[in-house]
Each structure stands twice: as structure tokens, then as C-alpha cells.
Length: 127
Image (cartoon, rainbow, N blue to C red; front, side, top):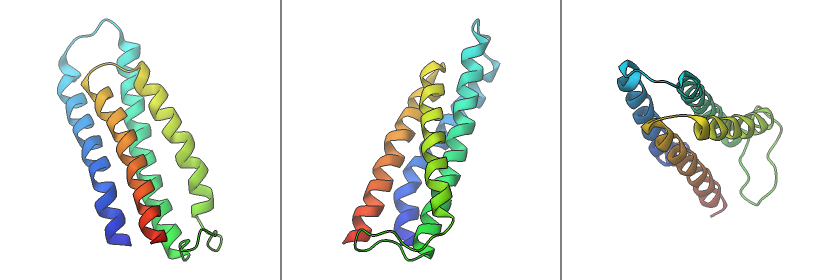
């Protein structure tokens, strides 16, 4: 399941990489609203942290036995990382809404992609 998880979370990582590339390229363009640019950078940082947290959650979840029958596995790091991922995901979306530029589209796409990836990981685990 580790390999399947990596494959399903790869598109989210690729979208995040593209968002960072577009943000770095657009850094030289002068802007009237600096706070929107700062909001976009904060959103990208939060999305990067959320991605790492989610990867840690999935690894910890499967290391502690997973949940093949819909029950919780033994306690582990995943219990702490779940709420942390949720809050960083919400912060990412809110900051991206206030952000400016093309990276905003990539971050919102990242949100959808990582949620679909997580759902598919848990659906495949139940199978």
C-alpha cells in the first residue's frame, strides 16, 4: 500500500511543484497589492506542510496496521497528524482564496487532488 499511496499522492505533489515554479517566476513582476502576494506565499508554505503531514499520516496509518475493516488501528502518530492536516488544509484554502496569480489555481487543484488521493487510498485499503 505504500507504493499505491505514493502513486496516488504524486499528482498533488506535482501540482504543488508547479505552483511553486509559477510563484518563483512571477516574483519579478511588480504588484500593487503585496498582501495578496504574501497570502499566496503563505498558502504555498501551508500546502507544502500539509503534503508532508499527509504523507506522514499515511505512513503512520499503515505502519500501525491500517484499517482493513473500518476500525481504527492501534494508536500512533497518525492520531496527531490527522487534525494537523485538516487545519493546514483549511488554512491553505483560505490563504489561496485571498492569494493572487496562477499559483492560486494550482493550489486549489492541489486541494482537490490530495482529497481524491486520500479517498482512493482508503477505498483501496478496504478492498
